[in-house]
Amino acid sequence: MKSGRLAVVTGGSQGLGLAVARALLREGYRVALTGRRAQALEEARESLQAEDRVLTVPADVSEESEVLRTFEEVQRAFGVPDVVVNNAGQAWLGEASSTTLEDWNRCLAVHATGTFLMCREAIRTWIAHSRGGCLINVASVSARTGAPLAAAYCAAKAAVLGLTRSLAREVAGRGIRVNAVCPGAMDTPMFHEGTLTPLAERFGRDRETMLRATLAQIPMRRLLDPGEVADLVVWLASDSARGLTGQSLNVDGGLDMR
Ligand SMILES: NC(=O)c1ccc[n+]([C@@H]2O[C@H](COP(=O)([O-])OP(=O)(O)OC[C@H]3O[C@@H](n4cnc5c(N)ncnc54)[C@H](OP(=O)(O)O)[C@@H]3O)[C@@H](O)[C@H]2O)c1
Image (cartoon, rainbow, N blue to C red):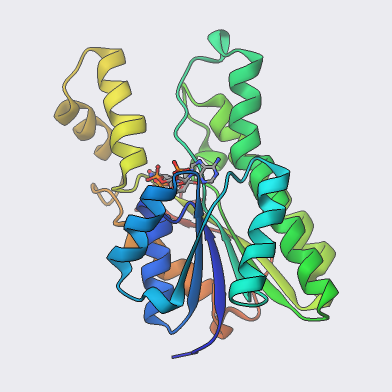
């Protein structure tokens, strides 16, 4: 147990973010969870059963003032974070030809701008305190493969990969590591409510048929448990990964083997 290390996890109220929080707590971390819905964060905190080691900060990552407030609140309550996991995100489906500029901008604001703002504030904080740190950005395997009906989402996630590599080069000499994980389809609310259900409705199929069609494209023929992805995040945050920076690691059941 590395007691006392502190991690901020955006989008920590459910799905992968909650699984990452649970895995980090197991390793002895204290965690600060962000998300827009205060009630969902509170329920997540209760479910983690480690209340003195969990802080919740309701905040939207796409709003600069809320990101600044997040870092202020975390430092006031818990101190300077060691690790920041940029996980907040939302599903996004739609043909490029019918995507409005507003929809496009919103998708990039959450995934790309939100990740940038959190990375920037973490780096500023670590520089101000003359110390290193670890950034882990959650992208998607679809940033590499592309996906129909998901141009904005894939573009935003590809931006996260470019941001990860550029920041890694920029801050490596300061003892700050920046890496990304690229999950495939995960068994989370986003996959079921934000992807599978709308796709089934769109193609006039039932959810089971749609799920079978999705799994048929994955060599392992199953959805990922978010805990599997969380284990990779915890490893990337650990000293075992001290030689890695600027990497984007797939955890996708074999979907993308390049
Ligand atoms: N599920 C998959 O198959 C899959 C595959 C590849 C990559 N990913 C990526 O993995 C990450 C986690 O996905 P998930 O499946 O765990 O999603 P999820 O179950 O929908 O959870 C998303 C989390 O992000 C928060 N969130 C959404 N928008 C936010 C914003 N603007 N500011 C702050 N928090 C926000 C949500 O809380 P609030 O709604 O309360 O804000 C929630 O806590 C995302 O970045 C997603 O793109 C998912």
